[in-house]
Length: 227
Image (tube, rainbow, N blue to C red):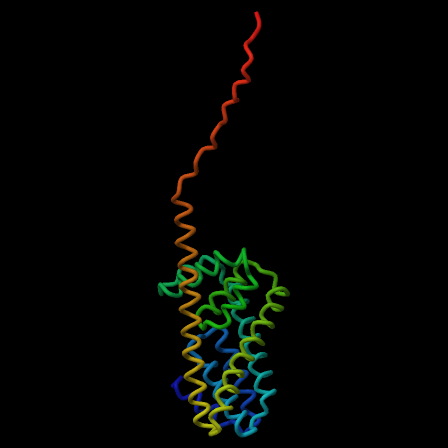
């Protein structure tokens, strides 16, 4: 059923309802990763760039607003559930994502939320952890607004780059969807690799025993004590 969402949204490209549906998809994707908001956004943006419908600015605004709203829902879910229940998920990947987000949230919340927006499971883990750890909502909302706008602009940029070469709306939409999926996989792999390297480095530092400071013996002055 989920694989039929993107074609359905593309079919609505000439209708004002496309903005509402796009907003709803991006909102749901903020706390339910299986919803294909990226592919739908890129596909609709590619159609808009090649055919003029829907209005591209409207697509960008609807996607960014939906992303911020979805992130806020995830934040309040985390605030209500708490860290203990988040980290006790039976799915290893989800539990690991929450554990990593918890470790990083105190040190670099802004960069974590910004990067997490580009990773479907990662953004849910990051935003719910932000709520569970008590990050002030006003601060979270400001960061989320930047992250959601950047994510929407990136997706639209992919569509524009593709449609400038492929002027057929359907072909441009299909190619844009593939590029978006590949980019998401690459970002996911790169971020995961960086996280594993940092964890390994931290483990090595913890395993290395600290050396006791060396005491320096005063150098002889060459003088002998007088009787």
